[in-house]
Amino acid sequence: MTGSPKVRDSTVAGVTLTHPDRILYPPQGTTKRDLALFYESIAEWIVPHLKGRPISLVRCPEGVGGACFYQKHVGVWGPSGARRVKIKEKSKVGEYLVVDDLAALVGLVQMGVLEIHTWNAVVADIERPNRLVFDLDPDPALPWARVAEAARLVRDRLSSAGLRSWVKTTGGKGLHVVVPLAPGPTWAESGEFARAVAEAMAQEEPRRYTAQMARSSRGGKIFIDYLRNVRGATSVAAFSTRATPQAPVSVPVDWEELSTDLRGDHFTLARVRTRLARLRADPWKGYWTTRQSLPSPHGESRAPGRGTRERRRTSRSN
Image (tube, rainbow, N blue to C red; front, side, top):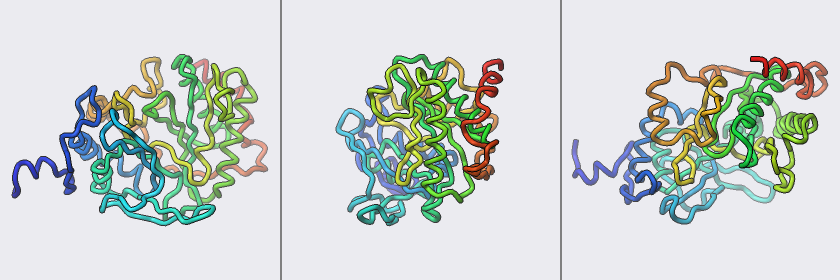
């Protein structure tokens, strides 16, 4: 190996890090180099969730102790390893980044990125989303058991519509229920379906759930955020870190793991490494090969609001 030890220590996946010893997460002493090495160690897990998708970012150039800001468009900056793509928007053309490999991911770390949020479509087929995401955002006062129950109810409602779903922690307060799709629905169709699921749950149990974004409507409830499914909206990527002090990570889990011990921010940088080392199988293995279509809006037996009460009783008896 050539080069000085200092240069080698500041290079990860071929990307040279400036200020590699800058502390990004002070409570753990996690440096920029530590974060780059973390992503290098889990590249086979995270890159498939990023590849081909436009992203939006949360940048914290000085770490979580400094100023952080959300960035949607690339502008003049950007790591050389990431693709730049132009996407037509309502009033202009926006330029986005796409991370297709580890070098591009480490390039984001170099730029101080602590959160990566992805679209529900890939650039190659940008007008046809290939997944749905339901973001369960609870009132902080609610017990975790309520959040886990909500995720299962979303799963059961989707199942009654003929759709399989998977779950992951968000690295924040809640959970994401994710539905892979064969590209085909329009943004309007996928958004309308997601809205119907959320509103049906809120109408059945208005004291427990809401589909309204307004903070005033969320007290004591779980907001079923279906708006992640409109064109241009994003959700935090699986295995992305979050820009909060404890260095939490959004992690795919098995439905059986939704115990009272799990929380949305349960998995941290350190815990993810341990988890992956002990996993016997990918809890989302079936996700990658599942190709399913949204039910017909005229299909009475597969409308998202049908058959849920029976499924709920079955769920609670398990």
